[in-house]
Structure formats: structure tokens, C-alpha cells
Figure 1: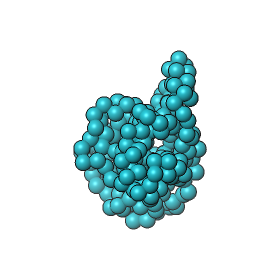
Figure 2: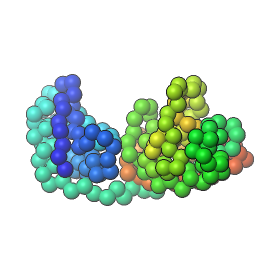
Figure 3: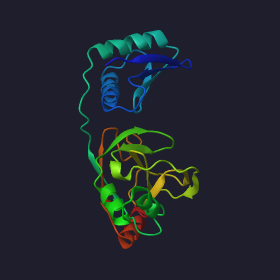
Length: 229
């Protein structure tokens, strides 16, 4: 697959496969990411995969933009996009009040009942595409078309950590209390931060995600259990 290259500051190269979100482009991003991880060029520090591009950072004392681009191009000549076969992660979610304040609004916008919105959300084919915005914020593709709603005109402040939010085709389980303009369907007691320095987040890029519905009592019980380890 063709790619374009752009130098970033003095220590990185951005490799881009498409201008819009595309399944083939993302598969190429993951394949290149894994290829570079298995055989890193001299001086490479790390790679950061996104939806359609890959950021390759390097040590300026050991290499430069031209050398990194040359090495990446060599990887690309033998690159075959691979199927994403990550682990399946289960995330509990409670849709009941007060955890799903935008459920009725999403129902009104889509012409569905709240129960139908919940059923659609549970049926989504979710996969972790990238991390961004804040620590542990995994952007999950797979929101069913019938409940894809745009971002709100204005963000809402103080949205609790663990909120399950959607916008367009994407879904996020928030990890911090902060503003969001995405629609809040529910809240999860599932811990995204693992405490493992090597694998700090529950999701790896390419992992599948299944949402499991729970009630308020189960939410409270799981939250207490996990708060105490």
C-alpha cells in the first residue's frame, strides 16, 4: 500500500496511508507497526499507531529523518497487511440512571426506543484502533450505524471516569473525570488501568471488545470489590 512521509520536529517521521479512516489503511498501520517492532531500525525509539498513520520517533544522536524513512520504506516493500487478531476483552456496562444521561437523546435522534439503543450498542463489533487524547483512552470502532450520532455542539464538564461514550462510529470507555462532547450511554466498573508498567491498559491495539450489561446493584458491588483490589 502506498504511503506518504512527513518529518515531525527533529525526532520523528509520520507515515500516512490514507486521508480518511479506511480499514485497509489501518491494517497497513498495524502491519507496519508490528514489522518495525520485530526489526527496529538503528536509532528508532518507538512507534505510535493511529487510525491511518504511524508516528516513528527516533534518537537524533543516532539517526535522522532520511535514514528512518529509508528503513521504513524497506519494511513497506515486504509488508503484507495482516488480519487483526487480538484478544477479546469484556467490559461491563450499566445503562440505568444516573449512568446514561444521553440515552434518551440518542433514542430521540435515531428514532429508536432507549431499549433499542441499548440493544444496538451491545450488538456492536468493537475493536481497539488507537489510543489518544488522554491516558487509556482507546478509540473503539464498531458502533452500529443505527445509533451513530454526531458530537454535541458543546462539551459537558465533569463527566465521570468509566463513562461509555459514543460519537459517529466510535466508542470510548473514559478513564478520567473530564469534559466530553460525546454521548454518554452508560458507565462501566471495568478497570482500564492495569497497574502493569509493561501493559498499562486493558486493551491492546487490535483487541476486540464485548460490552456486557449489568444492573446498578452489580455495578456497585463490582466497583467496591475493585476499589479494594
